[in-house]
Image (tube, rainbow, N blue to C red; front, side, top):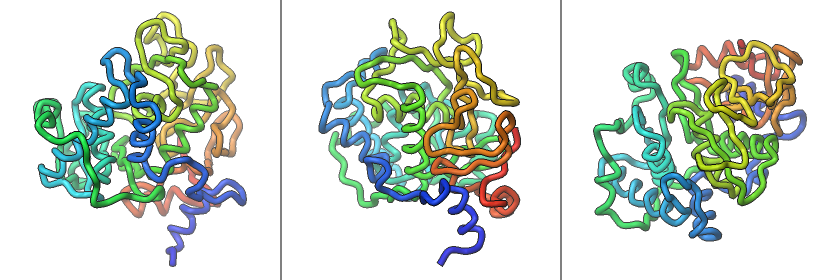
Amino acid sequence: MKSKLEERIYKAQSLGNVEPIEHMVPYPNLRALIDGQNVKYSNKMVYEDSGLTSKKLFAAAQQTAHWLKDSGVKGSDRVLMVGLDSDSAIILAHGIWTLGASLILARKNDRVKAQEAASPALTVTWSDKFQDKIKSFPAVFEPDYKPLLHQEAVVYWSNNKGIRLSHYNLLVNANGVHLALNLKQNQTFRADLSPDTTAWVILQVILPLYSGTALTSQNPDIVLGLPGQFEKTNFIIDFDWQELKNHKPPHLTVCPENTAFLSLNREPLHMTAFEGDNRPHKIEGHAVMMGYLETRENEAAFKSGGLLIEN
């Protein structure tokens, strides 16, 4: 039986009468995403700059899962990642989900607070050089623990709060971005965010596999960037919005409590709704987070049938 707070969170995660049910995404968890893409498109290039095909990424994730297990990490544990380059971070994230564990994201200066709040079983930093260590492990891994869609996949430490996100949250938000950008299979796109936000997780870890596209810096079909990051940008990644406007080029607005992205300009992403046309103050939908780490923060945030946010 759900507690009253759990019922309020579930209500916020529903969209009208449409509850967050598992069959709305084609994967039972994030491990299945990389597994499925490897089965169907093993030789397809996913990360052109680093030469990572689906097959190579899958093998590295399996080896990483072995290394994590050998390091004492179990399925359902948490692993904190700090200060890695994007390629290493992508492999580590998929290795963590292959094991069945959760990824903790935090910036370098938030490392201590994130460790105290989220209690990781292992912290992986650049100095660990884990990609060298995984080479001796097999490229096939059979997990002892397979999380369900509603279970935790990521904890994002931001503004002194830990935001908990499920496998379902991440897949639904990636699907929303996929639809908003109208990405076509076999297109290429560019995004180059630091690997310490959920926006990075959606755009650079999940979206290429989910959409059948490839990340590249060489003549991409579509460019997503921060304001002023690239000379030409098709979509702006907007972390600092104050109100929603119809920009040109369009802005993907960031809201970590809605997994990563909230809207494209003023249009909410698929399976997301909000109140307040220009300055949303309450959101609901399938990408609404599992909640903060702290119960008292959830008590204040989940009210009036939705999730109250500040922007």
